[in-house]
Amino acid sequence: MVGAVDKHLALIGFMGAGKTTIGRELARLTQRPFVDTDEEIAKRFGPIPELFERGEPEFRQIEEQVVAEALAGPTAVIALGGGAVLSEATRRRLRRTAYVGWVTVDVETAWSRVRDSGRPLARDRESFGHLFDSRADFYDLVAQGTAQDAETMLLEALHVIFSSEIACDAAVIADEQVASLHELPVAGAVTLTTHLVPAGEQAKTLAVVEQLWRDLEIGRDGWIVGFGGGSTTDVAGFTAATYLRGVHWVAVPTTLVGMVDAAIGGKTGVNTEQGKNLAGAFHFPWEIRIDERFLATLPAEERRAGMAEVVKTGLLAGQEVWSLPDEQMIRACAAFKSAVVLSDPYEREGRRAILNLGHTFAHALEAGSGYGLRHGDAVALGLLAALRLSGRSTDVVEEVLAPQPVRVDRDRAWDALLRDKKGALNLVLLGDEGGFVTQVPEADVKRALDELIAD
Ligand SMILES: NC(=O)c1ccc[n+]([C@@H]2O[C@H](COP(=O)([O-])OP(=O)(O)OC[C@H]3O[C@@H](n4cnc5c(N)ncnc54)[C@H](O)[C@@H]3O)[C@@H](O)[C@H]2O)c1
Ligand SMILES: [Zn+2]
Image: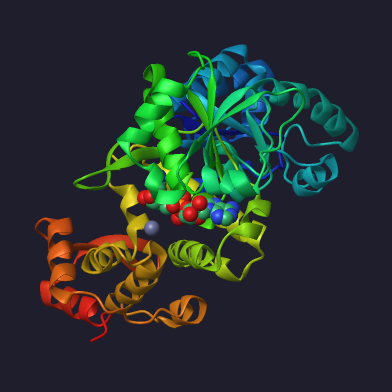
């Protein structure tokens, strides 16, 4: 299991680090329950300073029990008290059931936040400093990632890393176009064996996968790296899921779509004669290594396609991510997608559906065009329709993406939309709290689709 997929997201760290604030934010974004073990203790056993007066050992025992109960419960975001990891039993349970994120803070900031809080262990500056130093060793022992804010913690929790350097021997499955433009940086004496696949969507066939099955020479403990856009990472991930019944893989996306969307979330697969992505597997990459330098060679139309997904993400997140510089924009989008993925990693509860904002219309237009229309351009139009049906302004989409109605076969588009939906017309719309799925009357959907099509 990678990171916090199907595991608790447990926050450890010193008092005053902001575990509760960040924890609440993470719980909201991942739609997981939030447990603050200090709050839980106070609720059940009384104020913590009073418990401490009866002696720290008794408090630690209560704490160990409350943490154990939280860790035995449904997958959650859990903020632990600063000293909880002193318990060996707690550390063992954490290792088994949680991704452990260390919320770091410097000692001065921590002291300024808690000096007047009346906490039993924050009464004088000197012993506070000693405690700070000694606790750090324990945090270091169990932490799998560190962060000071929710966005970074989300990226850490899905192993999204902002560097493309590969640190171990690996078989690289590379988009041939990308491989002709870029070299994958390595750390130290690492051997990479490259297997080229056709550029873009052409690589997403079972024939390509079969060829890779034949050519790969790695063992069960070997690594695959997918190096290219979403098409390449989809096929590399699927090859990793199936080769020798599954080996580890790392995604190195080189398109904007790959960095903000395709490489994140564990969906891998190929196309079949019947349609796109019809064969595949959930197989989370061990790491997603993002390096915006690869974007320097990306054709303008591919960048535009990526911006459509960026605007979609920004609308859902309620953040103007599209106006940020590239790295910040990618970080924000990747973190938002990570949060949605962590809310429902294997799409069992339909929570990942909100990521399809605008996509029902996009898929219909793509079908109506006989698949000549670029996905990103179709999404830009789809966003217009979704916003109109949501009764919201379309200004951002017009300004950033400037979509124009397209000439496609109206009947084919409508038939495709109905087929896609198979029955009730459930669409993702946008509300004040973000995306939600709702039923929309057929006539309204038809009208919204028609508005996207030029005569
Ligand atoms: N798994 C998922 O969750 C998920 C999500 C979204 C999309 N996808 C899939 O991703 C695919 C689309 O991926 P994409 O939009 O990233 O494009 P892509 O991988 O199809 O690549 C598009 C083109 O850009 C070229 N290219 C890639 N990186 C480049 C670079 N740095 N410089 C110059 N050229 C470069 C490729 O050679 C190709 O010609 C679709 O198959 C879609 O189904 C998957
Ligand atoms: Zn899309």
